[in-house]
Length: 267
Image (cartoon, rainbow, N blue to C red; front, side, top):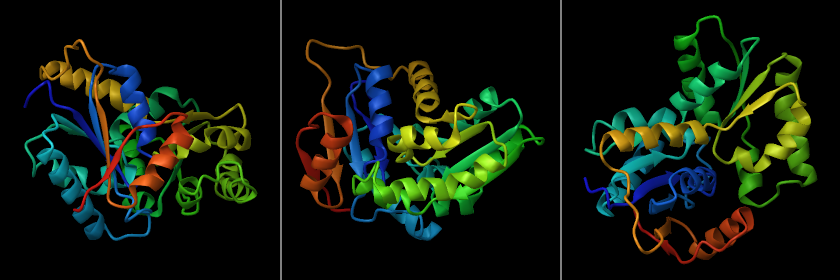
């Protein structure tokens, strides 16, 4: 592995941009290669075997691009594919679930934790199992939220449909008395303001991206993979399996800036 290589990261669509943004902040000298599997979004209702197949092809593509480290910037893929692919490819990789769980356990006081995620992530039990493994007294309230990713991908962040869906999914968690809510999907930070309004000030919201990038930075430092910087700024490249221009427009809307050329890649 070469420390001059880029960091690779992938998601089903635009959600991983929330992780990309954190990488750019914490590791500003690192180049990145982002893959959005927009031809197959959303992932929530797909089978585990199908999702593993998608992730395998994406990781193979990123490895072919010479990346030095891979972020599974998708909770569903972190839950279902990371353990298999980390043993299949000779590249260091990280998912969102273990760092997110560590952050939740640091913050919760009443040990009632809510998880909102895709149907596939909830079915996997990944967050609940990891939380219970680290603290058996934790009570976990998991809620699948299948309507949210399509709404976010469509840019409906404050539409009546988004407000109705967030209320539908989160009111039971609020009534359960949780004091901490983890975003079990990288799309959900785009709805953080709306979610905060529904949950109220007594509930801490956890986006696993920050804890994940900090852990990855420490791992990369230990492996001697951190970029040393140079005279020119790092290059960030974007690939998708679907329509490039649609992704570029979505990214501009959500990040408030143009990400530059987006390339379609056949898997």
